[in-house]
Every structure is written in C-alpha cells, then in structure tokens.
Length: 379
Length: 44
Image 1 (tube, chains in turn red, blue):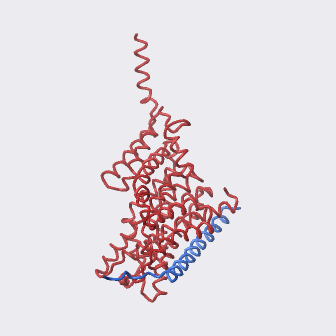
Image 2: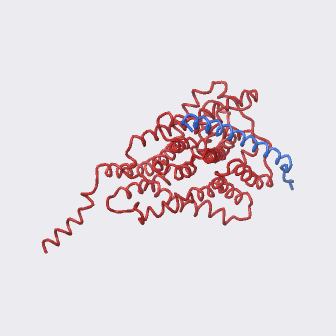
Image 3: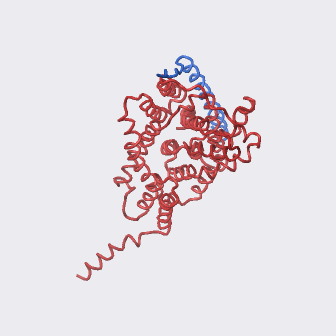
C-alpha cells in the first residue's frame, strides 16, 4: 500500500522533476507573449496561440512534439507542407483591396524597393556566419510578411521557425514604433510636406478581375517556386473582385483564416522548444530581423525619394515606407506621419497602393529567391 | 559556390528580378486600364 502510494506520488511529481530551468524560462516567455497579445494588443491573433504553444511544448513528458504527438501532427501536415501559410494567403487576398495600386501602378515599384531589406540582411547574416539556407530564412523577415516568412523558413530552415516567426510578427506589430524615426531622418522637411493629388483614374471592374489572373501568370512564369503563395493570394483576390462568390469570400476572410491562424500559431509556438530556442543564434535572428525591417523601410524611402525627384516633387517619399508588406499597418503609419508634418496631406490611399505593392513584392521576392536557390542547386 | 558568391548572386538576381517583375506588372496594369477604361456610372 505504502509502496503503491509512493509510486503514485513519484509519478505525479515526475513532471516537476523533469522540468529544466530552460523549459521553465520558455514557459515564462510563452506567458510573456500571451501578455503582449492580451494586455498590449500586439498581434493577439497570433501571439496568443504562439505563447500557448510555447508553454505546451515546453512542459516535460507530454510528448506533444515527438513523432505521433498532437502538435507534431499539426506541424507536419500544416506547416512543413506549406498548407497553413498558403491557406492564410487565400484569406489575405480576399481581404486586400488592390484598388489604390491599380489607380497608380507606378507605385508598385515602391513595393519592390521595400523588399531590398531581405537581400541586404541575407548578406549580413552570411557575414555573421549563418549557413546559406539559414541566411535566406533570416533575410525573409525583411519581407514583413508573416506567412511568407513561415513558408520559406519551414521549407529551408525549420530549426529557425520559432525565432523567425516570432521576430516577423513581433516586428510587424511594432511597425508604428520602428518606422517613424527612419522616416524622419531619411527625408527632408520639404519632401515631408509634399501634398500628393488624389489619383483620378480608378480601375474598371474588368481590370480588377483580370489583375489577379495576370499577376498569377506573370509571377509564376518569373518565379515558379513562389506559385503556392502568389497563386493563393491572387485566388483570394479573384474571389473578392468577381463579386459572385460572396460565401467563399466570407469563408476565406473568416472561417479559413481564423481556423488556420489558430493552428499555425500553436505550431509556431510548438517549435519554440527550450533546447532549440535558447541559443545565441535566436538572439541573432531577432536582431537581424529588426535590422531587416529597418533596411526595408529605408530602401523604400530612398526609392520614394528617387521617384519624388523624377516626378519633380509630385510624390511624397514618405509613402516609400509603406513598400514593406506590413498591411495595412505601414500605410496607416505613413498617413499619421505625413499628417503630422502637413495638416493638408492625405497620403493614406497612396500609401495603401504602395503597401499592397509591398505584399505582391514580398511574395515575388520570396519566389525569386526560392527559384534562385533551386537554379543554383542549393536545395 | 562560396558564401559571398552566393550572397552577391541572390542579392543581384533577387533585387533586380523583383524590381523588373513589378515594373513589368505595372506596365501590364497600365495597358489593361487602357484596354478596359473605367466608365463613370450614368447619373439618373
């Protein structure tokens, strides 16, 4: 009787005795992410499940991320295969209005310039000793596009998935704090005060319908490896613009996106296992991710300045900051900052155009990068 | 392929490719807008 009781108590306490300090730290970190999501409102839709996933995966003896474990099952079938990011992209496409971009197509170039941070950070990561594929995963944080970062990292550097995802989503939510100082120092007073005229050439319904089809064809011909991402985002947008499948648009915007976001978040959290996450490399990824977003903002602004010069002052370079893909946060930041410098300046629609251009640009950049990796026989 | 050669290749092809692809796309959009211009709805 005594032995049975002792065995039972021993069994009950085995979890406590197996808990390492590193795991305890990660559980606290998971709690911290949940706190940021609930109390501070930083990307709660993702930080909450990520935080909870981090807590779950660091509880000893649960076996949740071991082969056959529940979280491992979600991870293998949803993240590793690239299905979750692709499904989220259908929702993003259904939610995105490319109208402001179609009104002024030249602004699409700002969406390309905003992605330069990816490649500059990739070089920096290589210089710091990251392997080629790890550097690609770190650089992609500069896209400021969560699903793209997850897709690329899960394919080529899955051991960095936790760090890259947390960095991507955390910095996306911190865009209102990260971008304004860069915008302030990289533009002159004269440039900040430029008032942009409202675009006067809206796109017809036919153009809005043909646009996602054309983008898909061009993007997949240029960078076939980006097809799962670009194809899904444009499918979502075609559903929206067609105007005949309201139920599917509703499902893409709500049910599909919500369910997948939940599972994706848990899976990302589940990759934050103490032994993999608590490394110097994680800290380096977080630092490089921050640099990537700063560089993307800076290159977008610099290209905005160039466009401003070429257009003889008709373009306010501040909209270049929206060339990164943090939609629609970056566009809102541009509007707020522009309005701060000139109370008659309304940059929101122009910035929305650059921001949606950034979405296309980030997926295109990722697709090109993946295609180059394959062409160079690195993967 | 060495690290630096790889970094330079992917940076040049990546930045150049993204810029060229989006430039081409902006031209396609402009052509589409010319082919299918927006018509103002007639006011009753």
